[in-house]
Image 1: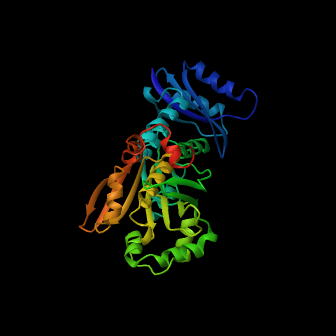
Image 2: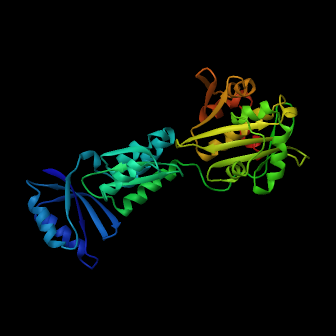
Length: 366
């Protein structure tokens, strides 16, 4: 007996599904899987059926029984038989460890021919989706990137689109409230208040940048910048892009540092950066910020945080290495640091947080 995946629209009336099942039974079909989809045409049932002999007669009989919608039949594989919920949960568990393999997981979830990363502004991919209606689906992953999934055998349904979106959301950072007022402690015993940046902080942040030397500003932004622009401030306040924390010593209103944890085009990966006012450098502020941002990255479900700087930024490189990051020089000038979040937490972020509950205390929650 051959295994076939048969999709047909079912009339929305009592006995509609029973009639389809009766046609399958009359021709010796053995149903081993069933899923119900919704689409623009209404309810669509998808059966995985063992069919004796040729399937042509069965498809013809179903077409006569269900004239309201087309009947499609494609060969199925034994590995496709099983509980869809269990399969989706297993894919989610796999993605938690390897979020960059999202295209492969989507292809497996949707039994697609191909799935690949694409920019949401890509004209080529948009054109492909238009020229193959229903057989190409663009699954957004954040505001700038997506996965283009294609399948020539049958169109995607609304239900499959929802499943794809749910799988993506399972590996994306949480969108709930972020810490707005936490306290961390430096190695020298200094208490630092971390507070999420809001638009009302603009004057204080501009003054912070003015107090910083040109070398400090260049080390943070990799370019000369004499003034904090309104556009940059909007980026800092945009929670769709990530999180920016203003750092204030306890008892002071003026921020002395900024810490950033921003989303990247790679799911499961965040980018960290920080700016510390010159007179507050060298006393553990940057190290405390990296540790706090890594804890937040773990709470978001990120697998890795990265940082970009130059070989001249010895202080940042020292901090990243101390926290367990691998550092690689590119082109002799720029440096790319990668810090696996889970490994950093297990190692205690440089050996200072090995006792249980230390990370909660690090964020002022212990």
